Image (cartoon, rainbow, N blue to C red):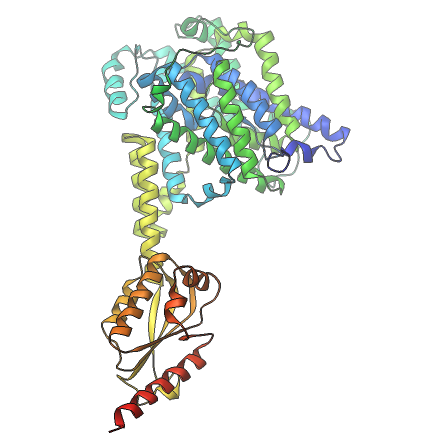
Length: 564
C-alpha cells in the first residue's frame, strides 16, 4: 500500500519541530480567515447554498492536506468550478451533481493510481490560459446580478442567456447594492496595494505586519456587513436569500439518483475530472517554485479523488487545489500539510461558533470579492503578448477563450487539445527532413549518379512525415539505395510501414536497399515491425560500411551485365 500511496504528510513529519508546528498553526489560521468569504462566495456563485462552500473547504481541505502529494497545497472550492457546477445544477439537478462529483473523484483516484499525473503537463499553455481567462470572464459576468442588486429569479447557465437576462432585469437595479459592491471592491484593491507583502520586499514589523496578514476580502466583508446593518440598506444578505448557515456539519446523505444518468453525465464528469486535475497540479507546481520542493503528482491526484468522492455526500461541492490560498499559506510560513489541516479546523470552528453572524453578510460584498478573485485569476497580459507568438498559438488561445465563454468549457478544451495536436504534428513534420548525399559527402559517390543513391534522414519518421519516404520511391536508382537513419530520433508504425513498402518496391525493381545507423527507439520499432527481418543482411551500423556495401553490390551488378 505504501508503495503507491504515500501522502506527503508522512515525509513532512520527519524532523518536524515545535517551532515549525507553531508557524504552521499560525499559517493555517490565516488561510482559514482568507478561505471563509471565498468558500461562501464560490458556493453562492455556483448556485448552491453558502454552507456548501464551507463544508467543502472543511472536509475536502482536510483530506487533500492529509493525503496529498504537496507540502503546502490548500484544497477547497475553486472559482474555476463555478461555471461547471452552475451548468450541471441547472441541467441535471443537485442529485446528479453529487453523482458527477463522486464519479470524478473515482476517476481522479484511478488517474493517480495509474501514474497519469505527469500527463497533465502535456496540456499546452495556450489551452490553459484560454480557458482560465474565459472562466474569469464568466465568473465576473455571473456576479453582475448581485453587484447591481438585480431581481433575477432564475439565471441561465449559457452566455447569451445570461446577457439576455441581465438586459431584461436591468431596470430592477438598486443603487444601495451597487454602492456597497463598488465600495467593497475599492476597499479590497486599496488594501491589497497598501498592505500586500511584495516579493523581495524587506520584512516589516509592528502594525503593518499585522495588517499584511489580514486579507482585504475579510476587511471588505466586515465593513460591508457593518455598513449594511447600521444603515439598514435594502440589499440581499445570506440570511434573506438562503436562511442563514447551519452551525453544525451535515450528516451523510445518499441522494436519490439513477446509475443510468451516468451516461448523460459523461461530459460533466470528464470536465470536472480534467479541470480538477489541471487546477490541482498547476497549483502544486506553483507551490513547488515558492518553497523549492517537488510534489508527487500521482499522490496529489489520489488525494483529490478521495476528497471529491467523500465531500459531495456531506453537502459539499467539487474541490481542487487553490492557488490564492496556497500562496497565502506559503507567505504565512506554512511548510507542511499541518497548516492545511489547521485551516480546515479553523473553518469548522467558525461554523460552530460564528455561523449566525453570517446571516448579515450582504451579497453585493461577496460579488465584489468574486469580481476581484476573477480578475486576479485571469492572465490578461497573455493577450498583449500574442504578437510575440505564431498564428497557431494565437488561434488556439483565442478560440479556447471564446469557446469557453460562448459555448462550453468541455468543447473549448477538446478544441484546444485538437488544435494543439494538429499544430504539433505540422511542426514536427516540418522539422523532419531528408537530404540527398553526394560526392561532397563521400568521394566514392562520384560518377554514381543514377546508379547508387544515398539519403540521410533527420528528425522523426512518423505518420506526418512518410511523404519523405514516398518521395524517394518516385526516384529510385538502378542499382543500390542507401538510407542513413542515424539522425532519426523516432519512428512510429506508419514510418516503419513506409520503409517496408519501400523495401518491397526496391525488391520488385531489383534495387538493393541498404539502411544504416539504427539505434535506440528506431532500432526497437524496426525489430518489432519485422523491418530488420525483411532487410536481412542489408542493415549496417554506420554510414561508411553501408556505402561500401552498396558500391560493391553495384560493382558486382555491373560485372554481371558485362559478361557475355
